[in-house]
Image 1 (cartoon, rainbow over the protein chains, first blue to last red):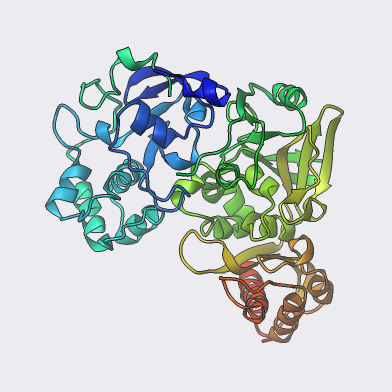
Image 2: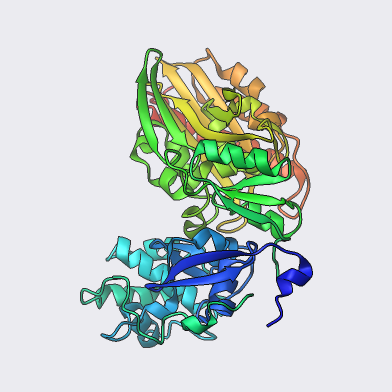
Length: 190
Length: 298
């Protein structure tokens, strides 16, 4: 593959990020945003790329167990850190209660905001397993739903709170479906 | 698709290392903390640094603690303290409720996980809530460079919109706020929607000696008050008996300290009115919050 960075004379660097429990090493441009690293370099397209301005929250992933907006973080800054994406919510035991809640309570219409909503919702429940409606509204206030399905999203997260069954957020297990694309692509640039 | 222009990325392991990297990469290098102000600026080419020096790994910049000294207790807030940490800090809640009240309306919870106190101050956005809050409590900003450290009152820290006194090869390490008993503080903001910058905002910190205001700080955001403060309003309140007539007078003077712009957030006269009204509301709540003001003069 032609190394476009040489054509453009932009610097590159190697970064190793733990994504969903697996260390991945890639050569990237320093200016690569984490959301594009996940989607374009690791094929983890569950994380959505929305407003690009840290307003909409479609790109929310966890970095060291905290939800962050991956459009406003460099992939380089994630080097040496643990990133968790929506692909990791499901475990060998089945769907995360938050995922089930979105199914049971019709928490999505078009689905674009859903990955960010679920990652923010999961983080809320880990910190506060029994949140009130007001606490849920506050927690997702940085996640926009343009179908305006907030009522059902709140119900979905409440459903998950009531059906947690001890579901934790232990980091992972390396199921191939949610692991980053395999190592043969590691040498690939950009 | 918004992507920053190319730059070199470096990661600093200590304050000294960060200063070395700043010197190495020259005047167009920038430090990046949370990145939630700088990266959007870079996407829009309002900022175009040739090198970014990531200071997230630097130890010792992320604590909020109280130091006891000869001149009394001092709250030390590391430059890398995240907004979420300032919001949740029991130390801040005990001594200066203005910070939790301001933080609760800064951006949104996910952004607050990443953005930092030092980064917000250095961005020096004219609508930055923390600049107004720190100005109200008369905080001091501590800056380190190759030649050592210096301390700047936050009211002298901003040189204008998006401009601070931090030099090319310097970095902010912490912000300190003196602990002073007998006072209270509050913050009031009007915004169009969650996460937006203020249309106008006001913070008040005050101390009572009996019925008399012994000291007061009034910070204003988004209304172009020089250095985020309303000095004439403070001067009019200091030494006066606190009552509703004084609150009204102080609010009017605070409005006169502003020079707001008409923009998509509202016309200038509306913002000026808001600045006065929010100053009054914050002042009333701060007075009640002292626990000794009974409002009997109202």
